[in-house]
Length: 428
Image 1: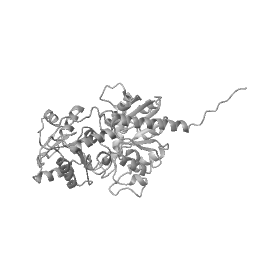
Image 2 (image 1 turned 180 degrees about the vertical axis):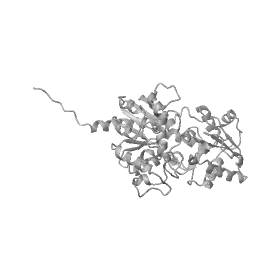
Image 3 (image 1 turned 90 degrees about the vertical axis):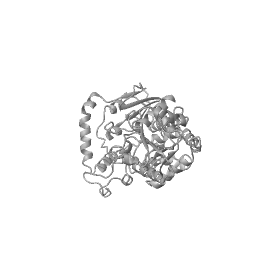
Image 4 (image 1 turned 30 degrees about the vertical axis):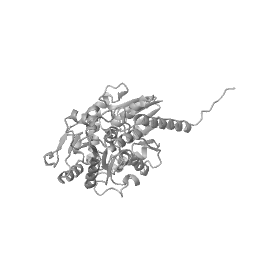
């Protein structure tokens, strides 16, 4: 069985990390897996850059056209918008690859157009890492337009200018006539896809993101703190997100409000650790000490940081299944987050962490307080063992590879069953 994964990058962004881990898990399980990307940072022989010289020459023009379209849309939705008009040479490479299955991931940023996806001749599995596939141009949305279809009558009041979302959704509706096998990492995203007007009758499966639980493991907390130069006994609260505090959806403002409640109460001294972005503006106004690690590019530093922390807080306003949460669980670090999106798949309330009411900073503060209260004198917590078990039972790489292998076999069998039998003729 030969499978080709397709993602815009092999390293940049959460979807890239998730796709690369699935690819590696499948390789270790014996699947002939390859990885097509437009951008690559590693010299992995199983990863191939598919952008041609022509693609690199015309890329600035394509980006300007896409920006011209998206800039005419006036909207309060801060999510990225993608018209998906252009394709790189990846479409042709896939078509002539002879692969048994094309496994798509995050293919935006002019990597695969809607038309190119529709024309792929082989069975296609599409793992969604956000809502774009069944929405309009937006990658995330808080309205229900994707459920009823994008019409003239249901446009949000906060949008004006050309209805880019309706135009892109109409193209998807017209071109994507063949139902594709959809996979989502979280139950929340699967339910949203099933409720969508575009994919309501498509096959949809839930397979979580993978983690190598033999590499991402618990370490001695005191040693981890010493390695990073952190205080040995002070409660440490961890926050991590690509872009750090600059992405409103990641909820850094909600976290700081919650921590200020705890610190100003005078009954809890703590320190914030943050990674994934630069120091935010106005840091001097925080009512608690903080240390910023910036962008961490190696897994060892990340594992040390997870193990040094007492809790990872994911205060996102909307989230699918963040890799940071899976990584922290594998390291035995409890989680606190809002009950939004796919967070229920990560956090078993008061078993592996605390699920707070959506966008409620006071309840987020209560969750942090509750998790920190579980620590014992050795800085460990009964939650740590439960977090680790949850990672092993739900997200371990061999388990995820097995689930994908079964899905591949099902898709190929369905394809074979759908083909008409070959008629034989004889000459007399």
